[in-house]
Image (cartoon, each protein chain N blue to C red):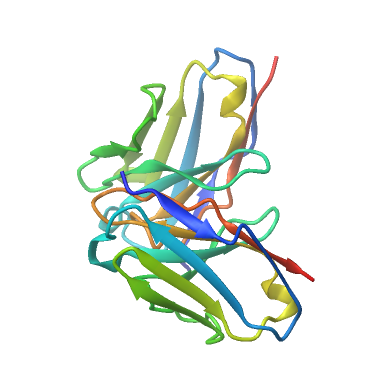
Length: 108
Length: 116
């Protein structure tokens, strides 16, 4: 089973700053099937990135994903007030779909 | 529009069973699999597995016990999660999400509370 580790656990930043979130896999992620989600309290997760770097329609371009193999990054170029939330990575290769433990981005 | 609508909150006693439904609309149901994800109070997301809605074949996450069963009914475009012999630690919000992963479409979540 692929195990995902996210760092840091918490990221304290101010609006306008750049956020860099890391997701590391215990083995190579099949076909870079790596997604990033944002979750706010009481809401279902929202897909931000799929296939490691593709953005669904409607997701602002301040969100970008990069990486391959075992190391992946989500970058938020300039934090907006609505971006303070918890972010999860998920790998979905090999007929399995494990999530990382999450990174909380909170207000400094 | 494409959406998944889940059944309402449930309060159950330990040892009981529950069946959560996830009704799809706006797309061809058996063209996409369905994930199930749970989130215990204050915790992260846990992938439980998925069902191939075309063949009905389920795949369960490692460590998920036989108390959890995925099923689907293409005639009513609905996927189901049944949990038997409920334990207090099964208390969580259960989500369905379209596809295996990289899911854009999620249900609103169903809170299952297990308490005596």
